Structure formats: structure tokens, C-alpha cells
Length: 300
Image (cartoon, rainbow, N blue to C red):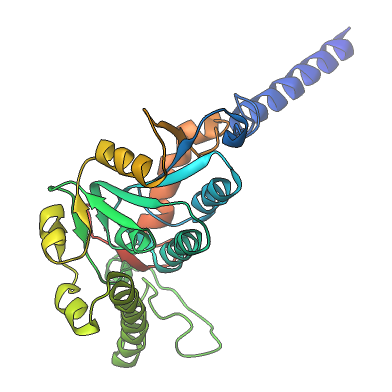
């Protein structure tokens, strides 16, 4: 009897364990789904939202692919609510947007919300028309390379750290020691090259001389109205103005139907509990590439 009870308890805990794993890592809904807008009657405006930090380009690239593949999408709005993000991710999204603009007949409108700065502004370079509210915060054309420094704290509490490396620059930027002059020059060269890529793109897309862009690209932000006066955007307007413009350029008559091109992602308990926390730890506290097209906010 005791043996049967032990087996029953063991089975109970095994079932409990696997159910807990499912709740934490499994989804509460079905797999990612997306309703192909080409199967829906009428002509559509596709909507892609770029929200928060720009670090993983894949979800946005997938939506751009959907816009190109869906025959029902006659115009596209990219809604920007972002302070920027990593250099390569911003460039990758920009290039895909520019390719879509140049290789298809789909008019693309960038609609800037509260903030569309740095890498967000970089993405906007790939569209046909950039629209911002008068009070939108945009610009911040520049590059930042930041990482925390812990070595003084470690020295105070008596902790030490040793590194074995293959070259003198392999641990440049380590939070466990200060940098020397050569390392600062090395990192500054990375920053300068990334900055040059940024301003060259702005000059080419906005039809400006490089010297004109350099005067504007010292890292400062602009309101939408200031950006319009400086030729950094095309026009002032709200999100609904962007919808009206997209409908006009896409040849859509009547009230346009706006379709969000994002997939419906299954939500896990892990996402609810730790999703935002992991993003903060990964992207804001030195656990990823620190070279960014990003406007500095309240986080380090």
C-alpha cells in the first residue's frame, strides 16, 4: 500500500511539473497567426508599428514581406514610436523599407508619434513621405556607445577579476577596468564610422549636402515643426492625416480599411512575468551591443 502511494505521489508531481512547464513556456493561445489580407475584399492600407527600442529587426522585416506579398495592400504606413536602437537593426529595417519603396508601387508613409528619434528617424529615411506631429520629438542624428563601469565598486569591496585574451582590444569596454587612450581612440573610430553612415544616408534620402546635414546632426532633437523647417521631414500631420494621405496615394476611394500586419503572437506566462524585464536587462544594462543610434532616455 505504501509503495502504491509513493508511485501515486510521484506521478502526481510529474504531471504537475509538466503542466507548470506548459504554463510557463507554452502559449495560452494558438500558434502565431495572420489573416492574409489578399483574401479579404477591398483595398487595404497596411500598418506596421515600430514601438520601443529597435534591436530585433525580424518582426518588422516579416511584416514588410507580408505587405509586399499581399495583393490587397495598396499603401503602407509605418507608425514610429521609438527612441532608436542598435545600429545594424535600424539599418536593416531602413534598407528593407527603401527596397520596398523602390521596387514596388506601394506608397509608404512614415507617421511619427510622440518620439521617432535616432534609429527611428533612420528608418523613416526609407519611405516616400515623412509626416510628424508639430510636437513630435525626432532627429537625434548621432551615435552613442555606452556601458557600465563597476571596477571602482569592486575595488572598494575587495573583488578582483582576471582576463586572458588573444589581443589587447578583445575586452575593450569591460566594466571591470578603465580604458586607456588607445582603446578610446579605437571605439571613437567605430562611432565616427557609424555616424558617417548615418549622415550619408540622411543626405542622400533628403537631397541635402553632407555639410547641411552635419550642421543638424550633432545629436540634438527637434520638434516636428523644427524638423519640417530644417527639411528633415516632409509635412506635419496626425496619424489620421497619414491614413488619408496613404489612401490618396494608394488610389483607395471611400473610407480606407487599415490592417495591422503584425502577427497575433501566443502569450506565455513567462512573457507576462519576465518579458519586459529581460528586454531591460538585455538592452539597457550592457548585455548587448552598446553601439546605438538611440536617443538617451531615463535609463543608463
